[in-house]
Length: 367
Image 1: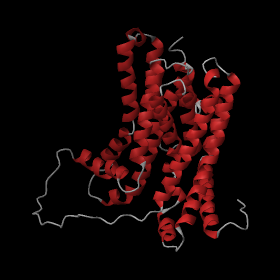
Image 2: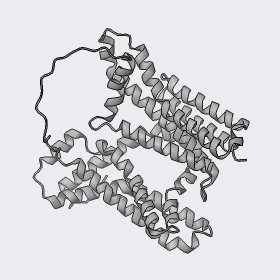
Image 3: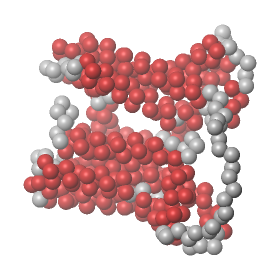
Image 4: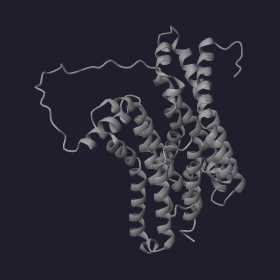
């Protein structure tokens, strides 16, 4: 990454740190992208076209709803920057940068530049998506094409602003604890929990995913919400969006939320393994519970999908393809969780093949 010689050293340092973090993130996805491009290349263009669609659709809504859609689009766009904030500025680097005697204006310039570096790929994705819709030029888009382009640009600029604030907040000094209660003396009475395995799972796996700067809990919550929303939109026939694309999003979200959850659990097991081996307890049941819990979000979405179909179209539950989809999804999720010894490339192949198989079966639901 080459910068002009007139660039301030602090600004150059911040940009190089962000560039290095993006390169590390891209390197971690190299093996995944090879298989994804080989197996799902034709589908990526369809997924890319969805990015700018909410901004165009918002122009046909009343202004309060349109502002809500644009705000939600901006928040969704800056979500990757929030998830990557620890890569952009690791805690030791952020603590060191806070101590530098630099003017506030220079710090803000660096924050804006780093946010612009993050928003550049997303801006290109917005441009490609908008170009696809303008080239297709459906009848509903022609009256709002100009305002839709302006709304797309506005959503991207708002996401840039929010990303700047995310980067700036990362460099803020942590607030000292105020109003802390003085320690009180209590008589310790040891109690045996009613369900020891569940008690240990909550202490060793559930709570650590929500503490400090661990984003696993929030990440899984966002993925679960996305899985539920995409599944609901698919089953309720969301207008203007092709049903096969919604089916692909729903199937992909089911698999991804399980894959991400299982990876987080496996990493936590790796951290706890030395301690668990030294404790005088049988940890096999605890580890099985932790791995099995990563299946619950996707299974909950599948169960909710069955409830939605029962309430809207009970005859759909009697079709053979519905049962095939449910069985295939369950087997795919069990394979992701139950095959921990797969190589990184083998795991990616399993995830992609599961998504494509579920998408192919799901495309027959509405035929």
